[in-house]
Amino acid sequence: MTEQSRLTRRATESLAGGVSAGWNAFAESGPRFISSAEGSHLWDVDGNEYIDYVVGWGSLILGHQPPAVRVAVEAAFDEGFGFQYETEANISLSELLVSLVPSAERVRFANSGLEATMYAVRLARAATGRDKVLKFEGHFHGLHDGLLWDTDTAPRLGAIGPDGIVESVPGSAGIPDILGSLVVTVPFNDVDAFDFAIRQHGSSIAAVILEPISLNVGCIPPDPGFLEHLREVTEREGIVLIFDEVLTGFRVALGGAQAMSGVTPDLTCLSKAFSGGMPVAALVGRADLMALLTPSGDCEMSGTNTARHFAVLGTLANLAALQRPGTYDRLQTLNDALTTGLSEIFDRRGVPAKVLGYGGRIGIYLGMEKQPRSLRDIVDQWDREYHMACYRAIADSGLYGFFLPLSCAPEAVTLCLAHTEADIAETLDRVDSVVASLPYRRNVSMIS
Image (tube, rainbow, N blue to C red; front, side):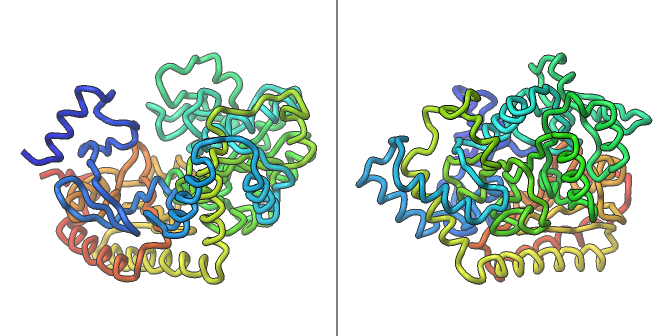
């Protein structure tokens, strides 16, 4: 019996579903037990080596065990490793965010992206006195009840009306249907549906929340002018515009997607690449809105584990590394090498596919002739069966998380700054071999 098999059996006796976190159980293969990690590579308990394309679900932008972050975390042991009291380091981190993120006039820390989006919506409701939230189909804002609607975790797509508004479908069991009445969902990049929803519900909408680049279903950029339109309408209607930059923040650019687009929201949610794997998140935004948070206002936002000292120091080290000259040029070079190489392979092997990435977050849409503009495009055109065949074929090739499928969309391939040109070349060779072994035939079972 392998160590993997032994641990799998042991885990089922104590861990719910055999895993510590639900997403660690990959489709069909289940969890892989890892013994160590460094840079862009992992080693499992049986000694197998992998190039990691999950990298902490996008959080480990510097890779595993970056030296600067490790030094900072070790320094916390000399000062008080686990306390969460106010320190000068907390001020320094908030000042840094204010200087780098266009929407950040004030900062409040949290523990996760889920918390940041939850508190952002609460703050918007406190500021406006309104109850509803407009979101976009397929955009994921954490697993809390208020926003887990019409996501890729839902059992089905919601029916879409002639007005473009999507039926509210919860993305998990255990979410009361009544909460769906507080959510208005429209397709991403659909200006007409958005405008209709504002005409119908605008007076009761507290916030519009979105991923400025949709990275949770691969990689779907906003249409030209789309973000600008959202900004114009929300300002006119007194609606709080929230950018969920948990994935885009400090990955696509130093100041996030808002720095790229020039569109400044009222509130921004940060985590993942911002903290480099530390358990830290942040809600940042306009000073007048942030003043509504306790203790200056009466909108509650706090927590026992918020801004632990080691996490603040580690995040400062992560951001210092990201500010070095050439950092984002290198990440873009890796991004372009992988996207270009994959596109060439699929074209040469006769596989229709669109590949697009920003900041090392790369969507691979097999079977698609055009770049998707919304989740509906993926559901209609993505060849999930062929994608699954590639996933099964590559599962034991040493590429961790490559071709990982979700229920109705592909999980993005994620790069970090520790990936090397040699990693990319090796990856392309392995992908080419897999695709060559699976001649493309749409809607024909590839299961042997």
